[in-house]
Image (cartoon, rainbow, N blue to C red; front, side, top):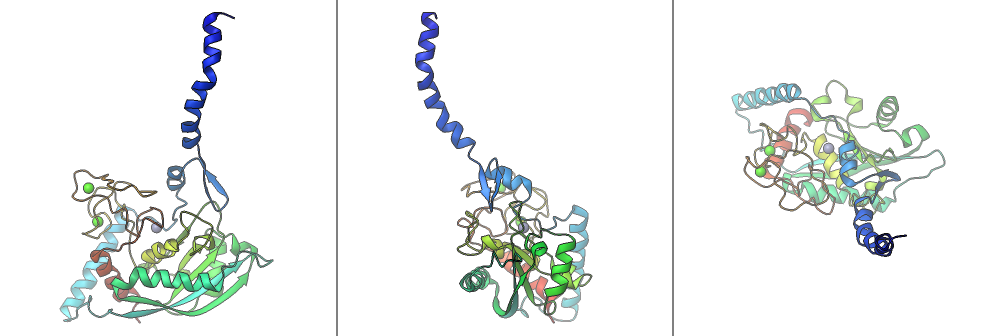
Length: 304
Ligand SMILES: [Ca+2]
Ligand SMILES: [Ca+2]
Ligand SMILES: [Zn+2]
């Protein structure tokens, strides 16, 4: 062995010791509900953060046209669509799904805490949520259901109430998925499918950190009330169809303060908004524009 080889060998442990911690940090897997991703970014990129249907530009345009025509009609009749829905109480039917052996149920405290999280988040919109019923079903297929035939079976068996009733299903959907919801304009064509499905572990006090404060519920109910993701459409107009949420090129994750992914558009990214993809501890806001939109959407599609 040459002197140089010996020197390299002697230095190797030092060099490795210097390099390994950063490698280890970079390679730290991100685990959600037992599913491992190479990073939090990989988790977000996988689509498991929320599998609510992401509308195409054409769907967005058709939907916006429906909204404009409804608004024009309301105004022609001398109605104020933004005043009618103040202080609306939404009945919540909560459907707990467990395994056939009864595993995976949230505590009643967690169910109550989830409703309290919704009430706090939507207080500024004038909507409140009142638990109308809780039922528990043991079904192995529904317990791990992430959409498809099992979803239709589960919802048609359990859904209660009309267009104004919020049906929440909590299960162990798997694949790291946190939840999904239906939009209010889908109610008319498929009422039994209407509702929100959340990972039980995402409920307050659950095990799906950093998504364990119940804001998956808040986010999915946002879709149920007609809100798009803040990054819908990227930097292009009309984005999320809400004028006071700054445009965002892609989902934010973690809590990236001062992120500005659309430099040519005014405003920093709305990373604290409930309709972004940041951690529960980071999201705490609906904008005035979003509050106005959910009131309009409720009047148009969910008022009895
Ligand atoms: Ca916007
Ligand atoms: Ca910007
Ligand atoms: Zn979503």
